[in-house]
Image (cartoon, rainbow, N blue to C red):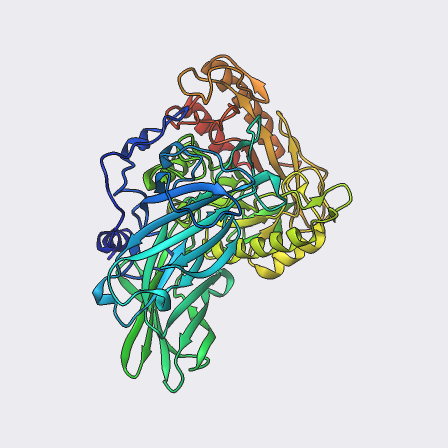
Length: 608
């Protein structure tokens, strides 16, 4: 069965338990996308949320929850303000609430759910894709714990807090200081203006339940070794004492099994970490032109029985920096120089803020980037849900992944600001969670810990830490502004025209941002007046001509001057910033799409 088919099957098998009501409506936001009409309480992002570790049984908890906004130090509310559509942030129109959350306030959620009788004897895990920022979770009045971090997933084993039968109740309490605190928040601010946008607070990715066996596979780390025609897989399992357990691993090319092997667990008691190495015969490389993905299946066996099975996938690809025939450092994909060119991608939505209205909308952004002739997107100071990277894997889009920025450090001194030591520890905890949480996706080829000096500190150490966490990908020590000679690339920002830094011996020269050509399109803007771009135009023809002029200037820089990659600002308009290739509602490409696509493809072929 093809990958897409069994994902659809899993979705069909999911037990969706959100409360439905015809009374719910989205709030009246400034601008909506065409996908907003498809958002319903019983149809709120129903897709399986973890495409690289798939189990057959799950229960989606997206839908209508009770909510209340109270004083930060207040007890659990006795009365609820109404209903909110999860997983859309409280500030968004699609939540149905569209209210800000203040520094001195706490957002509470409540909902009931049933545990299917057939899950009896299983451990029940409660998963959150992401909640911004500090989240405390209780089941049936029993507090399970608190998680800090606005971008990484987290889970609780809720089994022991469940009642023997009947309705179960979840309470979630969230505090989010946004830009009033030093924590990573990207471009979210309390008072949006210019390049700073509406904040996201509370649950903004899928919430779901999963039944698992007491003995089970807990996590997977999948690392292709392109040069050795192999894939290395680190499996973390939990096994009971006294049993003998094995892992059966299979690799599929479509329906055909190309590898099948069986391994004993490293330990048969408690948590065990096992490394499997699978040789791939006649491997098919993954690339933007041919994004071939192998399917994986892992089966945990004990006493001759299947206890757990998990499906995943991977792409055979390698990213590196290497010299071309003239000795110029280039970005190489699968050992061949490839000029990487694409837009800065902010991942904001006018109706869902941080949360795309539907999976089709999420996919559409990647489809459009590809159709416009690009092979790259720089995901800008935001982390997306797993399914965005799934579509990038499947459709063939290279990704530079930023860490969401903070105000922890001072880039002028490269030191932590006084009083922010605890925040620095939290920043590095979330940076590690980003790399571990998204590290299986073949689309990601570069980690970017700092953007333009925002919160930048200990740059060389942070770059080396990232490299140690993931030696298989490139590291951009700082995109723009304050380079410290670390990492794999030197990165400059230059508006509006492209430029290239003086070449170095070992690090590739990249242009992390340029362009920013603006055009407001009446009827498709966040507000009617006072929109802005780095350079403004009044019609599509003039904008197209200016863009083509920039690309004409960019193309020769990819030759002898040695530019290895470029990032154009940006995929879409974003609130009052109208620099997008598309309008904020994704309704229009603002330039002549055919002309710019041809020009973009020409740039991608410019490097030797």
